[in-house]
Structure formats: structure tokens, C-alpha cells
Length: 336
Image 1 (cartoon, rainbow, N blue to C red):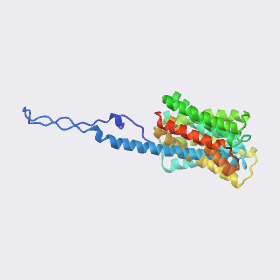
Image 2: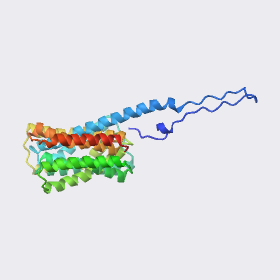
Image 3: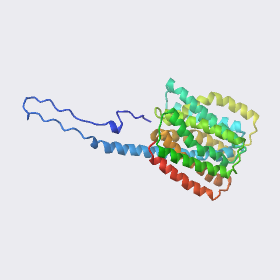
Image 4: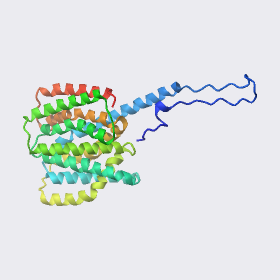
């Protein structure tokens, strides 16, 4: 992913040809060259920018679709593994996939100045969010756990404003707050409005994941998104291998089709492939706008919960879906 600079920004392009020097001192002996109109270049640049925005939006949406399966897949994984084993093993498997890709393509090590940011991504996205949500899902339903995802776009936008210095418009913030409120109200209503110990895990996961998303989106502007999550996963490998060995020796393992499938998805789909397209999308369209696409994630998760886990939805689901889609449309049109 290439970062923009003044040499490629459409607003800074103005190509003109200097007048040719006159060989003689007569007024008619030299004709200045006609300047090249910037308008001849602008439509091409605008079309390329529109394609980049569309591509970034599609990639971010694919990331959201991958993430929407995380909670149901985690619930499946918990049928075979303990929470600590599931998190440690998924981290190791994802790191092996990422490390294999980095090695096969002979990707050089990131610059030293990027390792601190990669450590934040690793702590928030690779370790913190998976661990805290997995612990929460031991006693919480996927519908209740979806509240953290409903609030994640707003939290990510806040972290982005503090860390990257983005300043979305007032319309953007109003739509984001409305969407977050709609999703939060729906998911809390689904769980009966009671706060449990699992909520502490969920709110902690919300904070660490927003920090990881923000830092990963920032790094994806200077290196390919798949390398961001790839190096973050590899960074956790020295911790993940011994952690997996200890956890597997202390927690019972009862292999089943559901359990293995859930583990493979959270390792390959949620932990690596989903984050690859997600970070690429954030780099293309900006962290705040990409984060608002994630407002649809809780509703997608509820759909998967019905299809895969047999949970039942209330009539509030389509109403919330309509409200969320309106908010997404507004935030995508607002200047972020």
C-alpha cells in the first residue's frame, strides 16, 4: 500500500510548460508553448481515486464478514478446547501461516521504528481481544458478546482521533454515535440488560482491540496490511508456543468436528486473512470510515448464530439492521 504524497495528490498536480526562449528579439519570432491544463489529468486521477476507495471499502467489508464468524467459531472451538488452549493454539497456527508467507516471499524485517507499533497490534489484536472474548464466551452467549463489536467502531474512531490526529465531521460523529447506540441497545436487550463478569472481559477487549486496530491501520499506510498482521503474529510466536504447551497440558481436549473447524477458522480466517483485508481497507479509506462498516458485524454475527448455533432472534433484529445500514451510509458519505 503506497502512501500518498504531494507528488501524487490530485490537488497538487498542475503541469505547465515554460515558454521557449526567443531566438530573436522580435515580438513574433517566439510563440510560448500552451500550458497543459490540469483538467486533462484530473479526471484520470479522480477515476483512480474512486476505484481505490471502492476497493478499500470492499476489502474492509470482507474483513467484517470474516470477523462476524469469530464468535460462533470460538463457541465451536470451546467444545473441544479450554479457553487458554484455544487462544494459544490459534495464535501459533496463525503465526505459522503468516511466517510461512513472509518467508516464501522473502519479506525483509520491518524498520526498527515500526516494531513498537507492531507490539501494540500484537498485544491488542493477537493476544488481548481473542483471550478476553474467549473468556467471556464461556458464560456469555454470542448475542451478548456482540455488544463489544457494536461499540468497537466508535472506540476505534476515538483512538484514531487521539493517535493519528483524524478529525471527522460532526455529521460523521452523530451517525457513528447513533449506530453504536442502536447496536448497543439491541444487544443489551437481547441479553436481558444484566451486566455480568463477562462484561468486564468484553469491555477490556473493546479497548485493547481498538488500540490494535488504530495502530495497525496507521502501519498499513507504510507497509502492506498483510505484513502488519503477519509480523505481529510472528512477534507473538516465542510466547505462543510455550503458552500452548502449558495450556494443553492443563486443559482437557476433546476433539470434535465443530471444535477443530472453529479452531481453524479463528486461526486462519479471523486471525490472519480477515485482518489482512481489514488493514488494507483501513489504509485505503481511512480508519474512521472503515471502522463504521463494522457496525454491521453484530448483526452478521447474530445471523451466523442462528444458522450455526441454533440461537433465535427477535423482531428487533431487522429494525436494528435497517438503522445500522442508514448510519453506515451516512458515515461513508460524511467527510472523515
